[in-house]
Length: 364
Image 1 (cartoon, one colour):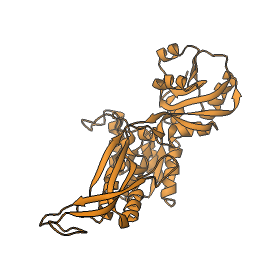
Image 2 (image 1 turned 60 degrees about the horizontal axis):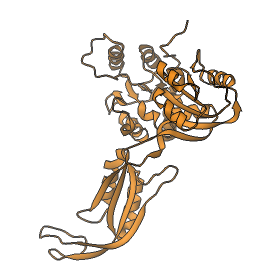
Image 3 (image 1 turned 180 degrees about the horizontal axis):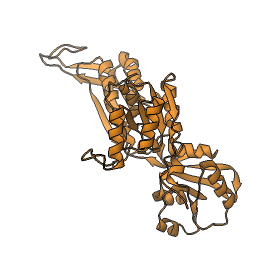
Image 4 (image 1 turned 135 degrees about the horizontal axis):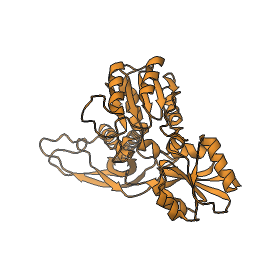
């Protein structure tokens, strides 16, 4: 298949509009029309991973962490990123990354962590904001079903576990076309009144162009009236981090041992033991120390993440058990998420997991 077929799917399934402003998710290298036959899935792209892709016949690498995180001003091979891109170009291996947009996905990195711990009643810790729009349009009554279905098929109307969500109200619309118009109903230069339905629904901001296109193509009017409003609602299905409950409460030391076993930790930095049983767990893949207060506010007994700062440990006191399990360890299952998404859409596309341990952290 062509590279663009896969990247278009990934751009939609893991919306690029969900990424943070500092991020650089998406296609790192590769011509849209290049042929791809198999993909190598990895947390990081290193020179060793490029070699692995070459030896295994994979012509695209799909990673969690982007290779090009900061703009490249030159390609001289001076930095690891420059050498990786140069080798990818030489071997004609495409690179695609899904980073912070994969973090906040409903079934993203933190959710996978929660599932690995067999948590129950999993919910988003810090819901995504400023990513929802409302579409309002006006349709002649007998064309409502066609227009509504086209908009839903384009991805609008999804709320959590529900789709095809919308609302309609009846009314009367008026318009008058000039001499150059070709009105669907009524006559030129004469005011016309038409029984119409006001139809409204919500959509993610990254779907705006696709949904509007579906609306315009399915609507019978020559000039389609519609409004799009930004919404301040939280998206409760997507966001940063997760909370959930253990099936059985654990003592703090037993819980830390569970973390070490599940995530393969060689060392866990943790705050002072509080003496309480661990029942409710909050977690965040990657550098989630800034969410410690959110975890405390949600009455979590522990917060699991990586790259926790000294003063975050200090400020937590004995209010919560903080556990820093390591950046690599907290995100090591991201390749599994990518595999599940891709294989469901392209069941015959060859996928393999990298066997390279890309963790740059070593322990004495």
